[in-house]
Image (tube, rainbow, N blue to C red; front, top):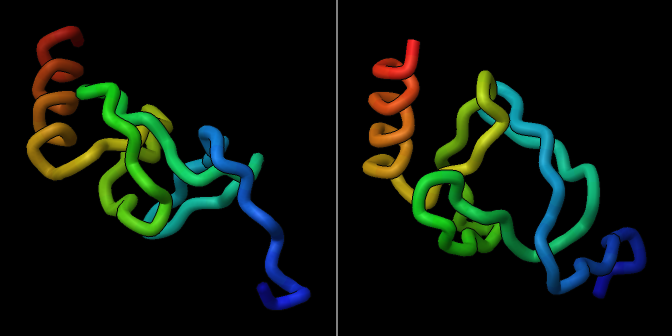
Length: 73
């Protein structure tokens, strides 16, 4: 391990989702998809909502959440 790297804990990370990036608030190795409940390893995290501050396992889950939210408003 590089001495400048922060060790990751094996639990759920706390993330602030930004436009095109995210900020790790609490170390962990995964986040949980807001739609499916599946664990997403941080190195595989590609889909999230800045507005809702939620991660998604894939584009299909992201679209499902978007359509559900659109129907609620």
